[in-house]
Image (cartoon, rainbow, N blue to C red; front, side, top):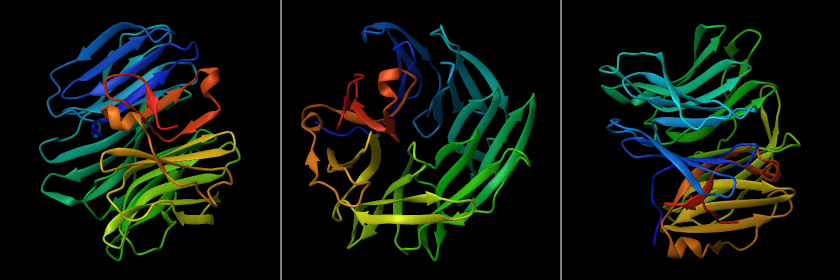
Length: 337
């Protein structure tokens, strides 16, 4: 079987009940009980063109589930704790004949709504802007984080420190993608100037960023070397205006690598990626200084699988820190580690 390039989101509440969101010209929400038995399915239909680049789902500390999707305007889904059926709400509109929004992101913190997204002009898709819309006490505040000077093929990553977001993303420097970050100041309601992390002068794709409980940051992406894309890993500490790199290495050789993703469990790091439609995994027990020989996951040979966002408040899951995971396409089984 093979990799299916369709994203999904798996969310587990603190009581262990589980939701799986899949997107394919609609939004399908499967609700499972604590023994992973399907209880119900809800479908938001009539969303032509809807895919994983046009929506996002998140879980709050109180087990409320939120979603955001772009369909002729930015709309929000909400599934309160104790419920399985979503309500829908229009957040804001834009001139969709002239502009388009891609990779919308949502998080609700202390009843404040944060929406981050790329927006581009339909007549000039090789440039766009990274925007943040922030709703506090019913008032929307809009900020431009940065202009992006290339066609967007990849999502940004958002991490949180003291209820304020930090966004990591690619932008072009001398014709090549480099990793940048910017911080939101919740006191001034403004974003910092962008700070550049990498300077390799090589093209990059598929950025993924994880922050562990020691405030140590782990980054992975695919970097172009020798006419192929290799999996690159970096880690270090983030200060106010710079990233101090501690370790940087290649985990794979150049090939057709895509979608590297990190899972940290206690002191172990697992790094997974797709190559030739198979799922590869390498592990490290010394914070990424050295890596094991990569192995092919047997399930990726027997089953169709996809990349999934996994978010959980369930106590047994909290020791697992993930950027994304890989799951069986028509199931909730997670594979790769």
